[in-house]
Image (spheres, rainbow, N blue to C red):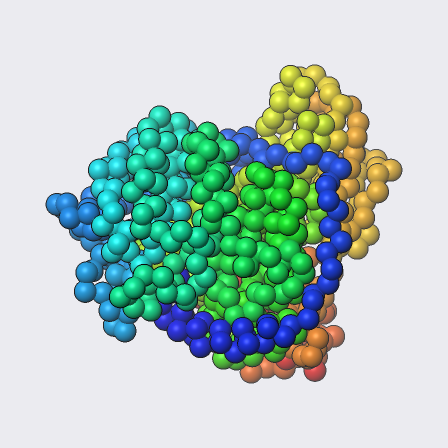
Length: 606
Ligand SMILES: [Zn+2]
């Protein structure tokens, strides 16, 4: 969605797309036609209490910014574009409506009101976490004030009619489900009736002109991503038309080749096409379409193959050709490496869907990597709209705010901050899955008995995770724990005794028993430091990892290190490691503890 990076994106797109015409089949999919197990369900937002400062500060920060946003200012571009009186201050940045906007003069006025729906969604999710009446009242008020502004003019004037429509849908269906807004579906109907005449009739690829007389900026809309929320609207009871619309906008020029294992990612805009894989997952979940499940699963594998050690992807917002040198080159030629809040939000949704369908722990491993090495280290959203946008994997990197205020990432950051809890645990009638290790308490009803699972840990700064069961009566069910693929010799103890269950890296370890009040579980996930090269051809350029954490070298630009020295790095305090001898040892920190130091994600290794 970024204008300046769009230019870089479009320059690289022609080359990469030329390449992909001749790209060989990745592999034939071996996906089974059906999975033996039923779909794992998410817990409700209110079932999980997180006690991690790192996660909860992000939720409190983003919610505080949203709750303090002036409502006239939030409505201002919507009112202006509808030709209504629009009192109040401009929020400015991307959010501003400027009828004279010129892409050559900067980002201010780039995407007016595009984050409105995401902000309403994030407020509704926060209400589901903690039912504060003030939050619900704000959601209700915003929806009603928004309803007064709905106009075809908005969609005619917007560069992103489908993008904005998608976010309005999301805000309204979340208001319905999580804040109980009784008018949300009626406002959604009005929105849909008004928007449809101004949207393309089918998914239009990025960069393709479909509105005569408009400039290049009008070709960057993302109609190919909108099916997911339309399927969700149908599932939540908004009506059959939403299922039909979701089908209408499925982007089969993208999913078709992916479903056959043909890698067509290269050159595509990164965040929106990864986000689009969640529409494919919803086509599988709603319609039972195996083709779309194969597309999402293959697409994820192709994404993993072009990811940084952090789990991030898409340098300069562009997906890359398999086996290219693009990731390696990006360590020197850009500071715009991973669109962090939007990219993480898309990554979490996709891996959550895939984990729920397949029960494959590697999707949890991937989610965890992205969480600790990207989004949890994002600088906090500021009340004036300054937003963390790119993670910087340049050899000389910095954590920095984007120049333009209120970009797309100011919409996804409050959403992902609310969503950590629904990614941590899953269930079916006889199983509970523990996917993320975060200090927390999960509460649920197991066969009419109220259970709580309390998790205590300093993970991933420590390798031990402790659990305790609280329940008034015992019940038989299975607890499943994700054993990350990177661990060696993991151990699982129940009430001090080693379990006979298989505890294998890269699987979920399952313990079926009569669980009772006071039962204790101890999980040990030993972490070794290891080096991960940027790619097969540049094995002398590697990131250093400890468990799920990438260890970033503080002020390490221009230095070369013996691999053995990096591998011998020692943890000197909870958030800090050290490698090499005095007087100039290398200090290493996780992404979330980098403060304002410059850093290297990858090292030249001798
Ligand atoms: Zn973004």
